[in-house]
Length: 268
Image (cartoon, rainbow, N blue to C red; front, side, top):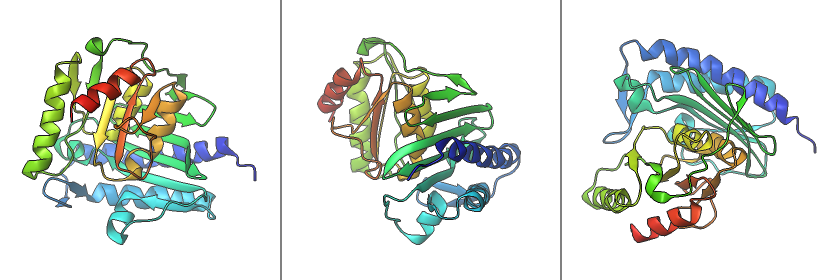
C-alpha cells in the first residue's frame, strides 16, 4: 500500500509548530513541575503538548497508531507493530525547559513496518526545524544538511547524557566511560536532549553521540530518520544494529564509526 509520506511530514510539521508555540510561551513563565523519578521531571506543558500533537495527527490519520511519552509513561509499554505508528516526545529536554536552558524540542517520528520513515524535531526557542523522510534527505529550516567529514577521533566533538538514574553503580559506570573517552576525543557536551543530539550529528555540529538508558523510542524516533538521511551512521553502542526499542543509541559520521565503536568498547 502506497503511503503519502510528504503529506505525513507536512502534518507532523504543523503539529510540531503548534506544540512549539505552547513550549515557547511556557518557557518564559513559571513552571508547574512534578517528579517522575529522582531527577526526571514532567511539566504541565509536556502533557498539554502531547494532547495537542495527538489530536492534530489523529484528525488527519485516524487509522494510524500512536505512542507518546506521557501516555505510555502513564499506561505502561506500548508494543511497536508494523502499522504506521506515530512516536512522540512532546517536550524532549524537560529539565532544560524547567531551568530556562534553550535546548528543548518537540520530537515526532513515524515508523512504517517498524522502520523510522518520517522525522520532525523542532526547537521552538532557537526556531530550528529539523526534518527527514526516508530516502529523501534531511533538512534544517528547509536547507539540506549533512554529517561532518571529520575522520580523526582526537578532533571529534562528543555528546552524551548521564540519564536520570542516580544509584552509585550507574553513576560510576557512566562517569568511568566518559573518563576513558575524554582522552580520545576533543571535548564533551551534554545538552540534555537526545533528539537534539541526534540532529547535531545530522547537521555536523557534533561528530559523535551515544546514550544508554534513555526514556524510550520517543527520544530517537524522529532523530533516527534525520541522522540516516544526512548520511550518518546509527548503531547500538556495542557496534550492533540500532534497535528503536532498546533504549540504547550511538550515532556518528561514517568515517568515525569504527574508531568510535572501538573507543566505546575500551571504555566499558
